[in-house]
Length: 292
Ligand SMILES: O=C(O)CCC(=O)C(=O)O
Image (cartoon, rainbow, N blue to C red; front, top):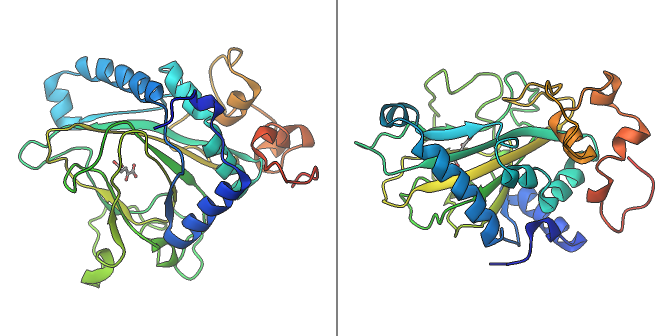
């Protein structure tokens, strides 16, 4: 595990290329760097405090999870602009992307096998996103930051189907969260099945069309993960009010952009030169000065 401050992390152009190749081939990739211990400790300190305040009955019904976390603790504000994530987002979307989701989830040992935070097989994204031949293009890049070790098969960690963005999407026209979901072939969830395990600090990035799930945690080690996802500015975030409704004066120009600073209609979709310069720090070093 690295010990430098995570704000100094960045990917080389070659690492960026390798990560994109990995996503293109496997639908997800494990980043070649890990979070510093201090980041893991700060995130867990916040989450520990939050969980301690949740009444047991509420925790049993809903589990432990929070969305829109950037404003809750400085560690999440720092993760908002975690450079390797924004470098890869820039590679995929160009400069016109913003925050699509920020959340954490902690799963403790399931009671009677039940875990309110467990999720059946699904893919991510808005309802009604256009499909091409049943496949969904990459509209959201999601980063999972492991804040606990996830080393056992039954610890409730993320499971994926490797290469599943090459298959027909599970969720674009209808929400599988509202409708029981079946597939005609039993081996759909066998071929390429990966239980994504790793030590605390592991970072994964994945395509919205990935088939994924997370089962109940059957171990005594709580499993904690933080997710940040990025999408084109023309897409509305999943949980956040955008345009941002509060005072943004304490945020940097990059943070304001990512959080949905109020702007002209054109600047959500096409953007001016000034808009497109907001994410300049995340361009490749070898890139020409011509902006997209
Ligand atoms: O707990 C996990 O890692 C899975 C989360 C997930 O599938 C989702 O939020 O869509």
